[in-house]
Amino acid sequence: MQRYLLTRVFYSFLTLWVVSFVVFGMGRLSGNPLDVLLPEDATQEQYDRLNHRWGFDKPIVVQYWKFIQNAVKGDLGDSLVKPNTAMELVAQRLPATFQLALLSIAISTIIAVPIGVLAAVKRDTPFDYFGKIIALLGQSVPSFWLGLMLMWVFAVQLGWLPASGRGTFKHMIMPAIALGWFQVAAVMRLLRSSMLDVLDSEYVKLARIKGLPERKVVWKHCLRNAAIGPLTYYGVIAGILLTGSVIIEQVFQWPGTGLLAIEAVRNRDFPVLQAVIIVFSGIFVLCNLVVDILYAYLDPRIRYST
Image (cartoon, rainbow, N blue to C red):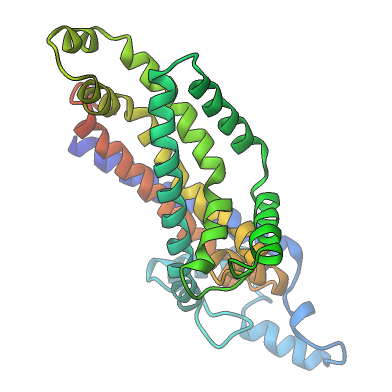
């Protein structure tokens, strides 16, 4: 187990390094940010002075090597637009994104788990067909379109919820539903499929022969073993919700890291954009590592090998 964990940690750092390399190179394909930041009447002297100050006049290899040296120390650079470091801006916006993502996961879990379990138990019944319809709608409706429709109905027509911004719990409801709706369909279908496999297993039949209540058989024995597949997907969900929040935060003007990333792209603020993507990647890698460790708790038969 120790060797496995060390190997996974090594590959995690390797993944982050590859991400930093790609982001650093792709960010500079859009051109020099001074073309956007400086006014049209700026002199060549002003241009050269700022170009030298931020190191844009050096070869890109030298710029990347300096970036890596500073990143190892936790310094991802200063914002080119605001008087803050890139990590300060990310740290200020990250709680809002986490808040939205956690509520989305909670909503998708509360809706998907009961429907997925009951759809498997009541296979080929009207309830099962109802679950399939929800899954179809969940995977067919784009999150941004759902967000706009929720805004039009509950904010514009009914006036029950605020249309945008961050404040009370009411501000979170519509963006959280729009962000987590696709995951409801994905988790429900995955859990239903896993439950169908488990329900036909021999140990479930033996538990029923012993006279255990059906509720205990389904919700304790079956669900625990069927949860391995969905649990794997939850490691992916964390990354999907964080990166997917870019669109939803733009729609609802939610002041999170997704909106910060869009602002950084518009302003060609390389350090901030790099910080956002690297932080997202780190969270994604960490979530998947935690999921792998939890495998052993859910199913002791699993053995890791490197």
